[in-house]
Length: 305
Image (cartoon, rainbow, N blue to C red; front, side, top):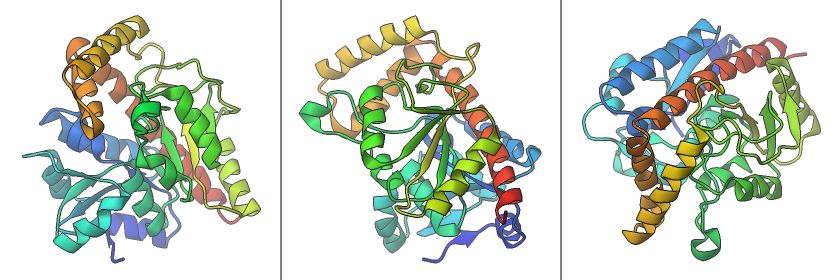
């Protein structure tokens, strides 16, 4: 596969400097225009301020890009929202010259292929509610079960079945570590109430776990680091539960199924919380990016120890 590496990313990797892959979905699909471009640039600068190099991932005209110029960021942030590309979509997109914003699975796959170990995202995909009826599960989970990356996230998206997703990660052999928390966060909520088996408190411990993965060998599974949104910035849990309950009822009433469910629920959550869910999500993403940069910096500094 021929990847288009931005000069800044190529130079950093050549000299062993820290690099953080950034998931572009929130830029392309999670925020209104033109705020999404402003946030995209802010997140990249946040990575640089923490001593690492940002590598926002996307596919442009059939070619995977690892690191985007400002004009390329603008391209995926403006106009009609680009297509979402999971790892299964990469080959058809390349063959047809398509453009799109990679999902977590697409970002993780391309980051690992480029040799980037750490990437930052928002909320992790997983097992959908009502799985026993529709057996709907995000492609993120299986990809993480066979890809050696460290995914810094804000836990499992609250729209999903969080307990089932945590169990599924265990079944797939993917380590889930709480960053400063003993329970799994739920993206815009700081605490889902679902316990995690391991807790760490600084970037050095995350990097140590990454080194231990390499020492042990075995399956190339991911390390998922779940950092809760700050309590002061989270969505009010009672408001969240009330709005989500109403949204799930409306979803069933309107006959929304399959891939349309999550966008439908997200739109209702943003609308019926007056945008509060979006602000909580943004706070989580900002903190995830900063943590990912710190982890990447420690990893790069200790890679040969």
